[in-house]
Each structure stands twice: as C-alpha cells, then as structure tokens.
Amino acid sequence: MTEHYYSSQPDTAHDVREIHAQLRGRAFRFLTDAGVFSKKGVDFGSRLLIETAALPDAGVFADVGCGYGPIGIAVVATVPDSRAVLMDVNARAVTLARKNAEINGVADRVTALVSDGFEAAGERRFDAVLINPPIRAGKQVVYRLFAEARDHLKPSGTLWVVIRKKQGAASARDELNRLFASVDVAKQKKGYWILRAEQGREY
Image (cartoon, rainbow, N blue to C red):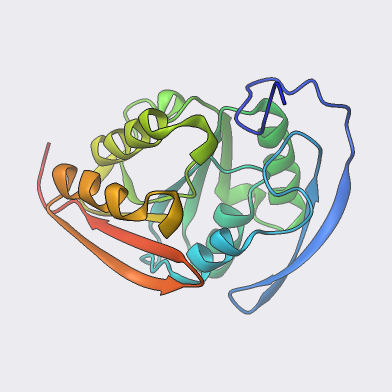
C-alpha cells in the first residue's frame, strides 16, 4: 500500500458515496470518498469522541485531521452558537468536509482548511481542540499535533483525543502529561480511551 488517508493528494480513483449517522441525538448525512479515513461509515473512535467531548456554548473549536468532517460537523451542529475550524492534510477530505457542512446546514459556522497539523490556523486560539490522530502516520506526527494543540488553545482551553489502548493510549497520556497542566481519561469503551487535557496556564 503506497498511500493512505494521511496523503496530501490521494491518487486513488474516486468512489463517492453517501453515508448516514445518528450522532449526539441528531441524524446526519455525509459524502465520503476513496482515499479518506473511514469512508464506509463513522468509525467507533470518532463516535465516542463526538459523544464524550464537552464544549462550551458559543465556543470556537478545531477538529484536526477532520477527514470528511463528521466530528467537527456533528459537534458544531449540536453546540449552540459554536464555530469550528476543520483541518486536514488531505485535500480530498477537506473538499468533502466543506460539502458536508453545507449538506448538514452548518456551512456558515464551519471553516475547512487544507493544513498539515495547525499550519493553516495561523494565530488562532481555540476553546477546544478535538483530534482522532492519524496513527498510521507515526508517533512523531501524533505527538507534534499534541504540542501544536497546546500552543493553539486558549488558557482555559481543553484538548480531547481518542486513541485505542493497543495503539499507544498510555504513552499518549504520558506525552500529554508532559505538555499540559492536567490530563485524565474521560472515558474508556471497547479498548478506546478519550483523553482530556486541560491547558490551565498561559504560553
């Protein structure tokens, strides 16, 4: 396999399909395609993150490695007056995320950007960051996203991460403890951990 969903410009032939998902008590429709993560349906880890993350009303949050957008779109659609910045290195995924924001009626509150990590975020600071990290890209990439998340959170901001126990959840928690003032396991289910990291201080 020469490429995967972390490729910036997938050359896999298109295979656009529509999927349906019930998330945070609401029905959603998403377009997916070949060359993007979890194209056949919203994966369990993303679902668990969507259902667990607690975000402030009217907050601005980032969905990093957004894929076709289910996490960011589901959260912004169900948190009053919130806004979201969706970012992914995969240009095909970002195009889908923009379309899916329109399909689900939140295009006016969603910005989708092609971005390697937080590169396109500029000086933006967020109330929360949600990450389903690209494990296949390797630990170095995942830990870089954690550090960039810290630097782009407001002092009171929170990072939410979903990661499987067998794919390094414990070591990810250790890395977050090195970067953040407070880290805990917000939820565990079917081998997945939701890690919550509190900023708690100014950088």
